[in-house]
Image (cartoon, rainbow, N blue to C red; front, side):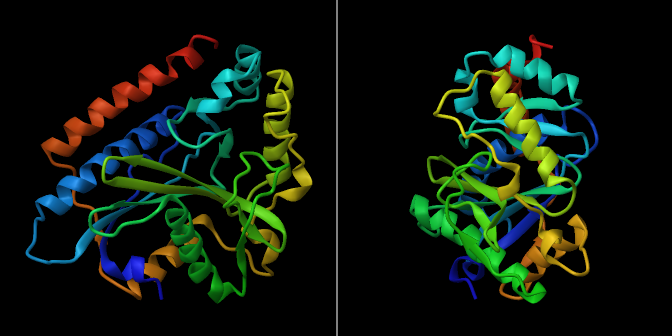
Length: 283
């Protein structure tokens, strides 16, 4: 059992999921809004419970999307790389956290927990470790053992890459704003992971990436379903994650956004559009 999970009453939402090319921008904007909103939720609770509130945000992009990291904006030939992604049918978006490009499509789920550091302090490493622990507990019923270490020749490599049987199935990023923290992961559940990796490898080659960027090897990355005799759906995996939380603490849907949260989202959405404008003009 995770002390971190059980310390909170979790509010979950799937806002930002959808099939439009711009849904990734919507999802990223909501995440930026939640990291600010979580402080208000805990400072002015809507109920009399003394339990800290946290937000769990799932989103799934049915329109094939490449979510770039800030470091990707420094690629020498980025416009050519963006043109390649557009030609391949991907919507390129730029996020404010994490280092490098990742793929999002119907076989991948994006998950994050957002919490208030005043309510439960977490170092940066502890934030990553809590995500790994959550995944370990969720996948244990399937007989899968989750590990965490860097896979340098994967796309978006990091110290806390998510590993099953020496294959990377996902990665984690973290964003902080004042006392708010969002720890976000993408998890490849099903689909053609080799093809995803090839797309990212070609993107970096066309963008004239130097040695600061990964030389992506498609053979080091897999999906969860590659290790299961009976495949699971993305929806089923999401339910395993929710079940893990529900077994330990309160879990309810995040109420519809009020005026304050909606205004915060609109402000974050405009920032997201401004951040992504250079990518759009290269279409």
